[in-house]
Length: 180
Length: 189
Image 1 (cartoon, helix red, strand yellow):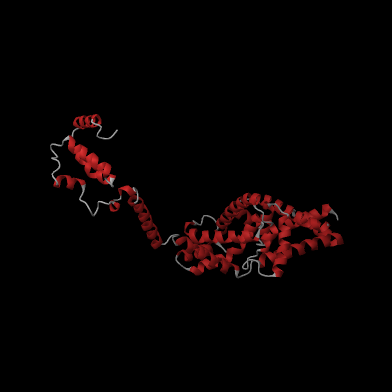
Image 2 (tube, rainbow over the protein chains, first blue to last red):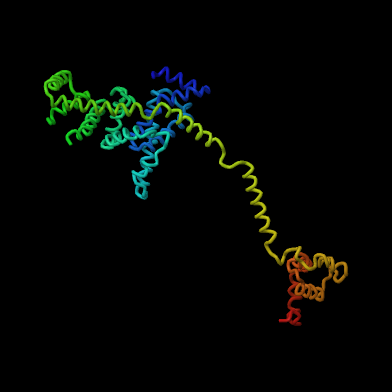
């Protein structure tokens, strides 16, 4: 979505057009979800963050100044919220007796829908779990969102060279299992 | 597996090679079964992951999210406590507080007094029976007040009227009367 389209959509929403918000959610919810997952490595947490970020958009879109792309703004909110939750989860893990497995069994109907999807997601989980956060982030943006390095650089503020290096190392980790 | 060559393939897919290097590695892939297999494995893996990443969450997810968001936005708008409940809390608090004062001193409870319906207050009794002249109070009147105090069922009641009468006497006179009472052993000590 280019800047003009973004601005139009946001303006419509601020003027009371609820469908405009639905459209914004439709265009960005998946990206928010996977970005959150990239940091948190957990589908339930990613879902929670997606809700939070959309709620913030709903309440605070009037404060958006269009000095960057809308997704750059959304990216920053998502990253902050995810990192906050990650910090909270780390503290809880020290005291929690809940295992990862038991968490997975409490699947939310509206996120993980059926067995086939669950199996595919297991594969994604296995692959992405190997990667450190920086590599996971660029891998998700390049593979799932099919963004160019230029676009990723504009969103994240990181150098193209650094992004390429991280992507290369991500591929290296993923292909290590080919030798097994 | 040829790790150096495999790494070149990974660099190719990461866009880390210049044009000449790209041409060289593509030729090697074409001419080597091993490299071709590795490249195919990588492409299949990326394709599978891309497929999951682009189809999950599904197309209904954004609608579900929006509904949840609107619910949460509504919850935040609604005050936690309804006004009627708040008023009920305030009224309850007032009742509890008032009951504390009403029951504060059971001996001082006006309504428990045996004298409430049966007798007039001390001041009335004294003045209507013309037992004392408030401007010229004597020792006998002081003794009388003391006697009533000892025998009154209602100490608080006496305090509100009897001591008011005694307070009309100046301090030096009160001291003088008190000393005389002690000497005469009127108070029984």
